[in-house]
Length: 256
Image 1 (cartoon, rainbow, N blue to C red):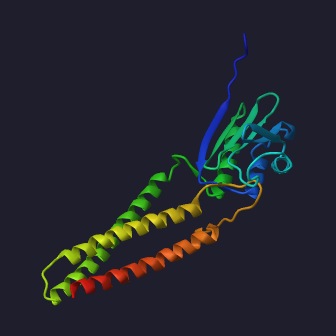
Image 2 (cartoon, rainbow, N blue to C red):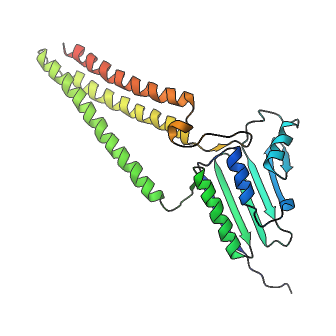
Image 3 (cartoon, one colour):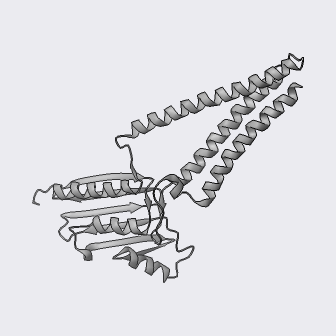
């Protein structure tokens, strides 16, 4: 009859982690602490082949010297497996470019919870957000508040533009409300489009990244964003201002 045993297991999933070469090396260094280095394996799947090595640097070099296809600087998956021979301590980390799945288990509950907490701190420092973690509700409230304020601003601007067009129409001797209605709905549609495009641009700067072969920027959004995203956001702001000016001018012409 087998002896009775017990194990503590902690599993967490993180999203929006921005992990470059330096962050991954630190993660793979701290996660298996307490487990012999000979029992640590880092691997990745490319096409139908799985490549393995004892360290991330060795794995990157192995990929670069292999006959793997595609862009060898682009990775969409990475995995760490570490377990001592007795099975008392085990760590598994799976990264797919969109999320990071962490599972720590062992007979020593203190070690398990301690390692899980250290990994959590590291991933949150890399921009990761734990799925369904406390604080999600607070973030949702903030986003809803921003959305409400934007809608209020959007309606206010639309009414101002429509009112201006209406005044010009009345001054021109016409009672037709069509120009004012067109100005109002046109402004609403345009500002909704601006919001949607701005969200797409900002999300690109906040998206998860997996870059084992190179370091990546961190910090504020402007520091993380690519030159293309920065130019796109500035162009969007300029285009929005130009659109409002053009819409007001068009309204004046319609009213004359």
